[in-house]
Length: 328
Length: 244
Image 1 (spheres, rainbow over the protein chains, first blue to last red):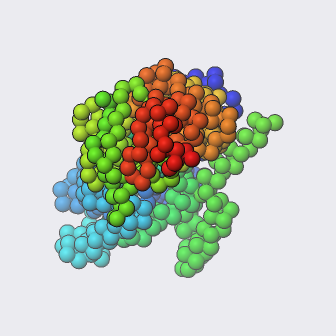
Image 2 (image 1 turned 60 degrees about the horizontal axis):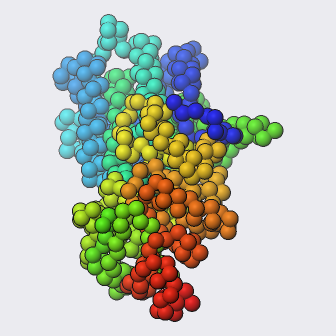
Image 3 (image 1 turned 45 degrees about the horizontal axis):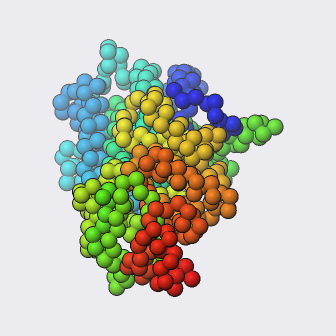
């Protein structure tokens, strides 16, 4: 292990992964979430958090913006749904099929688009996502259910627990979220996680160090698709239905907004962004059908107060506070 | 010969940035490339490093043709460049900057084992930190370093990849007089004590003349003169075109 004898003032790195206690602590808090908010909302938050953790690996830690992540989320949802409906697959098998389908798609899209940079990659990924949406809408209507989405998915059980009931489903999703939080934390601590951050910071330099940066970006995309596929499959388990909107670009846009709101490149940013977004959406929509207007205005205020996202700005302020304390 | 170019050319449209240059670097040698602005020094440097593809001619590393190799491939073979303008990882700590470069030959795509548990890599990074005199700043984000320290970090990142040939592009640019002398000493030590072969592009003639074993002078993309510092400084053509 590295010793700290030579260090003078230890300044916190804003993008470094948190201490293990934060990861375990977050999981414990999540266990009690249904006591604070409704169980279906809590389940939805966890599913989108998994999606967000993967998206944040790509956007926040690798610095690659994708506007087509709905494709991986939606394909994961459809693949799992089709497996449940037509193959009578068990929950784990359906989820694995969702993950594999999303990863396979990422492998294909990645092979075609990964060399594009910045906004070009974002646009190409958006185009691929929309292609998939329109395929599901019309040519593949017979399989996907078209505009109506994929329906008639049988109720699912896991280890004799009925996942049709809110609480068993919540804890099923919660355990998977806990595992994914831990996995993400491990990835960020690994040589590959460090490499992702180096890529985000300075791709040219990473290349000059000898890294194949195209491969780094590709792997990051495929790993991110793993999370999206898993989240999509869990969404199917949660809804017992696959809405066509899972493939629509708005799903990608929502994910981008959630990640930025929470703080891209921060470990807990996605959880916070998803939580705030879905909570506001659910609460305000109870009072007005024009909820988007109010939620939008609140987001503007949040971004003005927290320019680095909620978690990003809080971490920055905390770091500045610690520096002042050390200075004194 | 450790590294050589054979009649190498690089044209940007009608501009002949490098034209028919033969460059030779022996093992353990410290050789500088000098010349007026626009002479083609950095272009030649980038051709050697794999950042540019040559229009004509070849680059050989120990008789292996590396002319069509990309920047990262050339770097993995041991020819590593630094940049004229600082290219660091600004939001990572100084230590992480070095460690990321140090892990390139050991492990890169392991997604499970913690980076901190690779003892050999961490020890190498610590050693490099001492060499570039940044050990005390190891936990600071690189963006908080002064200009001179960033130049050192730039060299440290390149060193951490364990190169055989180090390509230094104006390492003393923007440094104060004291920092420049210190940096020149460090480069000399890397060459003399560690036996590292170094190609140096530099504008500061006092640095070039004091530490180089050989100098290649370029003008308008072509070789103007080549020889020891004494031979080059005595060359009338070089004096007329560059040294004044």
